[in-house]
Length: 83
Image (cartoon, rainbow, N blue to C red; front, side, top):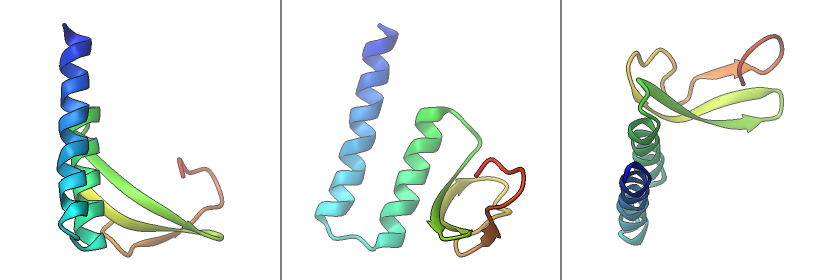
């Protein structure tokens, strides 16, 4: 039963994001919704969506706390980081 519940949660999240896309929501709104849905599905405190820009990572959207890396935050991709 847990697998079915998980599948229903995932499909509901996809439907909510697809609805935003169909309504032509802004890119920022869509990415924020994706981050929020991913946070809930992954059952974590925070999610950040990062765009890789050469040697730099740029936070595109995020959800959850603490918001120490807000959208637009840039960071180098060298060294020992998860990114």
